[in-house]
Structure formats: C-alpha cells, structure tokens
Length: 291
Ligand code: GDP
Ligand code: ZN
Image (cartoon, rainbow, N blue to C red):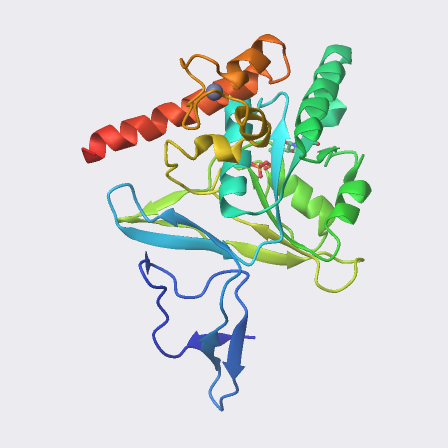
C-alpha cells in the first residue's frame, strides 16, 4: 500500500533517520489522494539499528519486530571469519533475537571442507544455534531451511559474496535480487543509503517473511558494555558462573572456570578468541570516551 507518513514519530532517546522501518506494524488511514497515510506505528517488540555514520548521533533503524536472524556464511569463496560469526551471534543475543547459521555453497566443498562444515555445525549446535547446510546453486538443503522459517520474520545477514542474494532468490523466486555484485553500498553525503526489504516466502503459511538488509554485513553496530560481553556468549556465561570472582573477565583472574574449560576444550578456542576481541573493542571505546 503506497503510504505517506503523517505526524512525527520519534523514539525517545534515539534520533533516527527513518521514522518507519521494515517490519513495523502500522495503522493506515485511507485517503482520497494517490497515497494513504500512516497515522500510527505500533510499539516495536525489538529493532536493530545502526548509526548513520561514525560521527553521527543519528541512527538508522534497519528492521523491527524480528522473530529470528540468520547469518549466511561460507567456508570458502569467500570464507566467513569465525570472529564475524561470533560477533553476529553475540549481537543477536544482545538484541534478544534467536539466531541461526546458514552455511552456503556446500556444492563447492571437498572432503576436508565437508569435515570442517561438520565441525562448525557441531560447535554451534552444541551452544544452541541451529546450523543449516545449503547450496543456493543446486538447491540442496534449501527446502529444509525454508521450513525452519515458517511463521516467522527472519532477518538475513551475511558478508558480501557469501550468496545471500542467491539464497533469497532460491527461497523467494519472485524476489529477483541482483547477484554477483561487488558492493552495494553507496555513500551519498553523510548517510549511507540502505533500503531493507521484506519478502513473503511463498508456499508457507501466511506470515512467513525474510528481511534483506543490503550492504549491511552483520547486524549494524552495537557497543558492548565490557562487563556484559560474556552474557552474550551463552556457553562462556554458563561456565563463568563457576569463576571465583563474580566480576571475572576470564582473562587473567585466578580461579577462572572459563579458562579452565578452555584448557579442557569444553569451550572452543575460536569462541574465546572472539570473546576477547569484543572485550578489546569495548575497552577501547571506554578509553576513547575517557571513562
Ligand atoms: P551476496 O553478496 O551475499 O548477495 O552474494 P551473491 O548472491 O551475489 O553471490 C555471490 C557469488 O556467489 C555469485 O557469483 C553467485 O553465483 C555465487 N553463489 C551464490 N550461492 C552459491 C552456491 O551455493 N554455490 C556456488 N558455487 N556459488 C554460489
Ligand atoms: Zn572467569
């Protein structure tokens, strides 16, 4: 329904460049003009934002009312770094949006890569994140993934080139997204123009949607509080309950249950490395802000 926005919609404490975002539930007032009017935006269950630019205090709401978030990743051509996967998962924990991982381009894997894919799936499923193996080229695994999206609004993210657009085309044949682009981020003045788009998934019960946020690799930006980082790594958080000190950062403290678990391989080194890298960033942020 072509609509104009009537009124001034602002979220308290956030200066946003777009009042209405993909996924919003709105009230529409019929009008005799060529476009109807959005007169009300219903409260958002959740939303993800990113700053309009590094220095700006304005934010851009990328999507609202998500039920799930899927990271499209690839083991090769290009390989998705594990820190990228873990940052995505930690951010989804912070936003309280259930996350899943989709390993695409399975048609390219040799025996060694198949084994690696198995190990990756085992690791993340043991933490609680579903992992789907697909090929948007051959269609392998696409039906199973599509089934998991039933009845939900799911955000799809992924680093450039992993085949996110191809996958959306495979799930939603009418989407007709361009594939094989080098980059789709255009800088126009201060703002990065990003148009998130929502597609209804055909063949499922009504109310199954995919949201694509072109040009957004992960989830937008989120600054983590240093003391909260471990809350967003479920297995580290759980084991961290056994640390001697309640405010243990799991870096150097004596009696740290997390570092003990790391030695016993009950926590994956790659996950711990990602945890440390986010911890590092949040420390830098503090330093920059002069806290
Ligand atoms: P995006 O940047 O994540 O949207 O990726 P695209 O969908 O544009 O795909 C990037 C490149 O990977 C294109 O050349 C696609 O044809 C290719 N590609 C996408 N999915 C697959 C797949 O499952 N297998 C193989 N072999 N290539 C794929
Ligand atoms: Zn500890």
